Length: 323
View 1 (tube, rainbow, N blue to C red):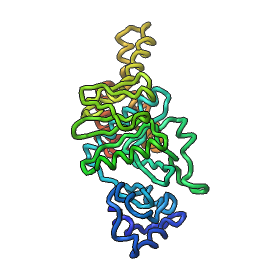
View 2: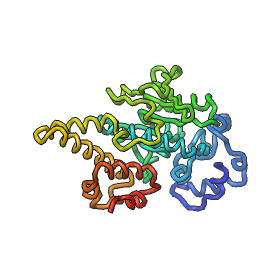
View 3: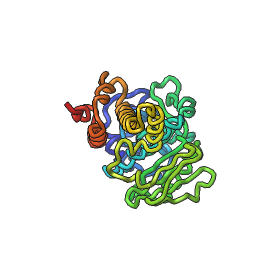
View 4: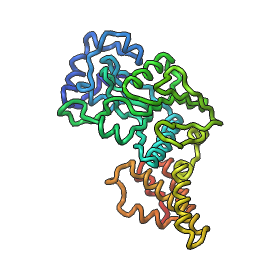
């Protein structure tokens, strides 16, 4: 709960964040913290801003509503897995379309009304990132997206009230969101809301194909892929991998169609694994990672893709390399 986080935080922070925490202990602001988004908005304005609570917002699963810090529901591993698959698929599709990339949870979005909201997954264009990712205030070193991502993905929690979800969507749309996905991880359904008609979503079931034509023209994926447990690296790459295979086939026609197909598949697998590994940061990767992937055959690369999904960190994944 937010009350526990606020009363135990010790580390000093910039712009008075630690002092703000201490100042409101033991008075009318403490001991009765909002339980959710709606509860925060039904109260008088709270004492927090994005600046004086930044240490907490950055390090804890909290959002800021009406001056109150609200603890986000902790998703379970199944929901996190689905969110991770959606992020990987959207990010590869966005990069392939030269649009931008997808980001995981805890991406701070500062709204015009002072809220700080954190989508479970989001898609931000390079154009919006360059124009709207700025310091939380002038002179502050921490960066935040000022406004909404173009695409917001929210994993539905069983405890969430529908009115709460509707109010959050309204704020996202008011601050520049174009598309919002409301994902039911248990029933494998997604409701897609668009800014022009925010009250009437399109519903997709596991047998349907989902698309996002306004942001990723021509892209589509079967809904089953977004909830599947055992996708290979090539499955996740989807349309991009198909394009890479086609290009590789064309380049390898002189040496034979069979060889071109094999090399195209290997190149796609290596490229996807490198892209996945880069999320740990370029500086953390071994200098010879690309060379080590070049030494692997198709079976070994698929095994590395499976171990990447199961490994808790980069070090553990590197230990699964052959030889």
